[in-house]
Length: 198
View 1 (cartoon, rainbow, N blue to C red):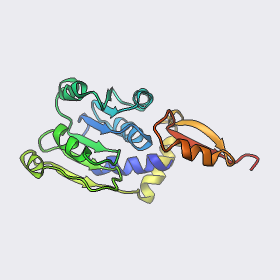
View 2: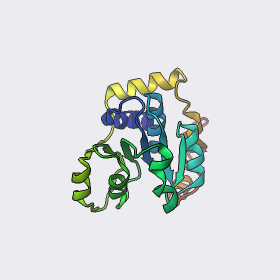
View 3: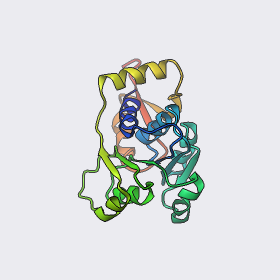
View 4: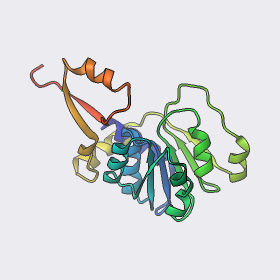
């Protein structure tokens, strides 16, 4: 539930109008949940860009109409054409230096950039690009009690299928090994701790 509550908080911060185009940079749990909420709440075209093939495949399960290889400069360059115009809203869901600049490059004039990725390193951008486009830049963190409650109700009602995000169940004994494996990119998305028999 937690990534869906966080993602709902981010999507609500975007205040997108029905039919607006959305780009999500990052196809991890938060990015996938953002795509799902954007679609659920009436976005038009939803594109998700990620470096990993299995995350791009999952993106279509969570409402993306377009899944792009973030490392493919040609595909990213054709984004506006493939979406029918630059996206009105861009979500940064990775948290790495350089992505704010990418968001500003892709977003439509007078669009919104919502930063949900927790970048822990210094980053730079060219403010003139944001000024010329009159971009709204908003940072979000966590969620409210209302976000969590709505996420619970929506998932319980089956309006957003969350089970595809769970790629593995591990025992408490296997948890240290699983954490170590998650340090490098692999095929996992959301690993659940199985406490049965613990």
